[in-house]
Every structure is written in structure tokens, then in C-alpha cells.
Amino acid sequence: MSSPDDVLYRIEARAVARALLLLATALALGVFTTGSYIAVLGYDYLDHGNQIIRHLAIIKGHGGDPWQYRMLAPYLLKSVIRLFELCGVQRPVAEAFMMFRIGQDTCVLLLAYAYYRALDLSMAAAVLGMALLAWGMSYSHYDSDLQFSTFFDVMFYLAAGLCILRGWWRWLLPLTVLAALNRETSGFIPLLLLAAAHVATPASRWREALPTAALALALYIAIFLGLRLIYGAQASVLPYGHHPGLDMLAYNVLRGVTWQQLLATLSVVPLVAALGYRHWPATLKAFFWTLVPLWLVIHALVAVLAESRLLLVPQALILIPAALFACGMVSVTLPAPPAPSHRKRKARLASADP
View 1 (tube, rainbow, N blue to C red):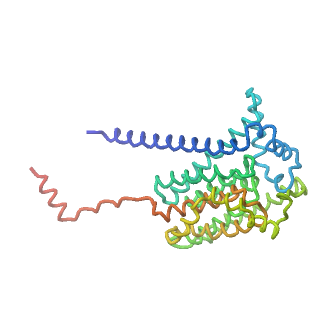
View 2 (view 1 turned 90 degrees about the vertical axis):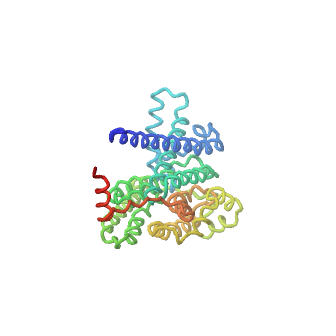
View 3 (view 1 turned 135 degrees about the vertical axis):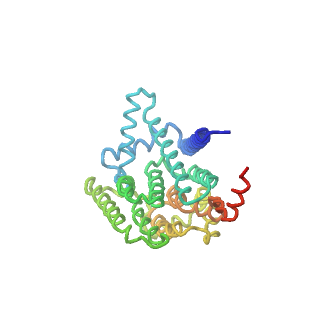
């Protein structure tokens, strides 16, 4: 008969084995998603093409609007490139870019798994969600370089969703600071906290969440404005010469490649999610109505939607878990066995007497 220590050891060993398997899966998918970008760009592009040109322009302070104000990734990469140079790596710039992006993608996928589990999806569903996200990431390379700020954006939104679901609300403050230094699209993070707190059960907690959300929003606004004061006005980078507004909207809607790229990246996930809307948990519905409509409208008016990586935030945070809920892939918790009645206990004790 196994001792309690043996049972505990086996449980811990299985947990460690699952964690290592999960890490290996995320790393393999991260190599795959990064490799799909490099296969399109070419390895030489990383240290001779637009990738390094834009990186150096941001470091020197003339990257243009909005690139100059997305400074987190370039300054982190500057340190990584320097480290690779000191280590004598043959092509330090290209290797630093590639390894940094593999690390980003691996972290994104691990956070996706943790977030999906926190939503009460099953372990199998969370792994499937990682695979669906990796699929979309691998097909989001249209007219793109490695786009470190975009994948940091996905990472920070998944981390924010996890903090909100677990009740780690104060962690949203440093997270918002990093996210705002990375990309201006992070401004929805404080609003997600309010939305989730409003639909919290058994009672709304939005008043409790309001101070944290207000401080996070103030930090975001301060960093947003501060970066523009520090770096000053920059020349606007107009995608293919199209101006924000109806001009960009028409450009997006009337191009066949837009719809091709959206299908390649999002697949049928939004359709499956929509068909099963009634099965979504309240928090996921709150996230959807807070983020997705405005995200789509803003990006349709100011960005090129064929660059479908721009939709990975709503895909990872909302649409993928919503589709999994629509398919009924929730975590199953076995009910505890009922306590024996008084008569059954007496009969059991009597049968145990010699």
C-alpha cells in the first residue's frame, strides 16, 4: 500500500511533467510562429532591411508617428543586441531579433493557456486555444516585419485578463505602465477591469475596482502624453499614402487581400464564437463589448486591416476562448461524494465490529 508521501510525490511529479510539456509545446509553437515570419521576410532582412532601419531610427529619436512613441521593445532589443555582440555571436542583430521574438511568442502562448484556464476552460481546451492562436499568429505576417510592439500588446492584454480574473487588480498598474510604453492601443486595459467588475457575481464590484482603474487610466494618459512631449512632434507615417478616416476605410474594405488575410488569420473562430454567444461567461461578454467594436472601428479607420496581426488582441483575448465556450469545452469538476447519512454510518460501524 502506498504511503501518503508516495502519493504526494507522484502527484507532484505529474504536475512537473505537465508543466514541462506545456513549456515545450509553447516553445515549439513560438519557434513555428516566428519561423513563419522569417520565412517570408528572409534572414538578411533582419540586419540589413527595414527591420534594423526602423529600430535605429526609433533609438535615434526620429522614427515617425506613431513608431517613435512605441519605445519599449526597441530599448529592450538594444540591450539584447549589445549582449549578443559581447558574446561574439556572428550575426548579433539578426540573432537578437529572432530570439527575442521567439521568447515573445512563447510567453504569449503560455499566458494564453493560463488565461483560458482562469476562464474555467478545460486543460484540453486551453491547449487547443494555444494552437488556434499560434495558427493566427503564423498567418499574420502580411506586409510586416517582426512587429515586436504588436506581440507585446497581445502579451500585455492576456496578462491583464489573467490579473482581472484572478483578482490581482493592483498588478494592472505596473502592467499598464509597460503596455503604454509599448503601444498606444493598450488604453483599453483599465476599461476591461471596470467591465469585468461590473458583471462580477454575486454582486457588481465596479465601485471597488474604480480607484485601480482610474489610476491605471491616469498612468496610461500620462505616459501617452509624456512620450509625445519627450520626443516632440514626428512626421506622420501614412500607410501607402492613405489618410485616416473614410479614405483608409475604403482602402480596407475594397481590397480583396484584406478579406483574404482576415480569413487566414482569424479563420472561422469569430463565426463559431458568435453562434455560441449564449454560452459565453459574463466576463467574456463584458470584455467583448468593451473592446471589440471600438477596436475594429478604430483600426478600420486608421490602419491597414490586411496587416491582420492588428486583430490578434481581440482574437487571443476574446474570440478564441468564446469559440471554445461555444463548443462546450468547459472544465469539468467532479462533485464531492455525499456525506453518509446517520443510519448508514451506524450500519457501517456495526458491520466493522468483530
